[in-house]
Image (cartoon, rainbow, N blue to C red; front, side, top):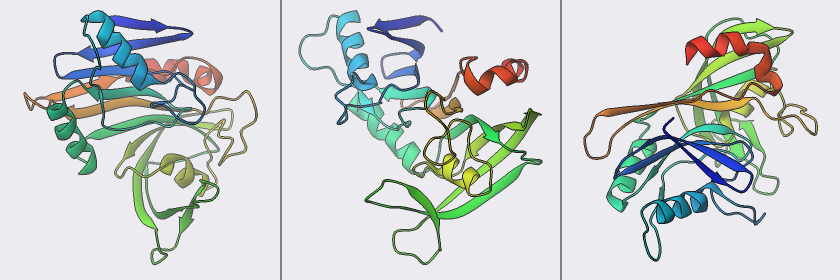
Length: 236
């Protein structure tokens, strides 16, 4: 990590930067973009960083091409030009990127498994539920969950997303009796618990050179991650 962005209480690690891309490690509980909370958000922080670093007057362009839920941290890529944004957005839309997450599950996932379900969001509550294939609004969701270690009734697993549905990692594991540690919405997590879900690896093609770019990030050794400190470090 070559640089850190410090603003208020947030420290953001820069994973890679060039004329077209700005790749960072999103901290947990920082929204990616402005929302109803009015809290500081990552997108505006990055715009300020570019404005100050390169002494750019007026508005600064930073393209948002994918998202992470507010409680989730890890690898993210942003575009510094509209052309880069369009090309990256197409990669995410057509599932041409590789996205891997670490998650800690309550319970034992004994073997590498592919989960495929149909998911539907309740528009009133925002909850995502497993639905029948023929239900209106239901969308297919697939992932691969590959257990790495088991300790104290918990499973550290590496998740590879095959689709990009809202909350799919949380919902698909919880529906099989394996909710994520600290997940208050789908898994009975309690106040003060940080959900154990981290975007640890992201691979995509550079929008201009067409060469693969791989970002890697390690979760902080707090909460559920502390139990798996020795297993996480060698993987990264």
